[in-house]
Image 1 (cartoon, one colour):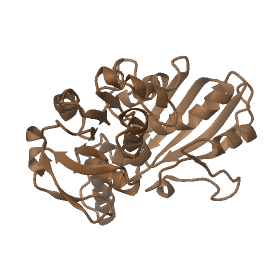
Image 2: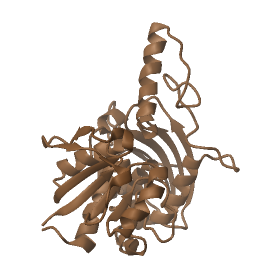
Image 3: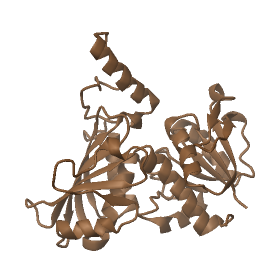
Image 4: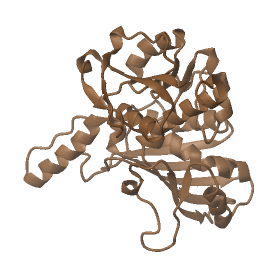
Length: 342
């Protein structure tokens, strides 16, 4: 017998990707419900490439009783209203928003990194999915941390506009078209022009001058991987539709060579190493789209510090950064706790 699964926020980029991945991975679901705001009620959406169509239900009237797992991709506002109701009804919530990530009673999970932490989910019947930029980075850091103990991480991100939702993708497309044809070009979703530009500003500014996106990378890495790791981040929005990239500088307690790191990463779960020191011997964001892996390239030693490495990390942010990680959490939950399906 399989699970009864709800996808909340099913009409958005991440919600649709969750449906695609549930179908692709043949998640053992006997029934799948798609739920969204009242304005989307009655919309028909595809369940991946399965040929099945699902009609969107109104979140305001949906009863979570009798459902096993709810994948939330609805943002912090609706999650705050409906996730506790779902959890109280016995439906385990896997939430993609930032609302519960730093709640000490809610596990923050990347299955390749800290699967054992999921055992704490019963406190609130809620599990948090990390920020997209954090998720791919900790997948890369975990095996290296196990081998040589990471002291400090300096990361610069190059984040695609899909991280800002459909409105971000639309703005990049429209601005690019407007520039070519000479039409007026005013930013709406972003603070400055995103087409043919980069913007060193994601989310709101904090008192120390960092942005909330940068803060998330710091605190989430500590919660998921190790609270003793020092992290500093600069997060930048770039004119790429899908796929986040990161330049990561790592300082270790123990000596580790680039060759050793390359061998370790090749054997690590969820990682694909593409690292040839030649033209095109690395992965770029467009090549990560639609893929499950976190790609690692440009692995090299940093001679300016003791026990230092640099690497390039790329992943499909709608997948590993959001939808895929949520489905992987559901799979892990089933294996460790629910054990309902064969």
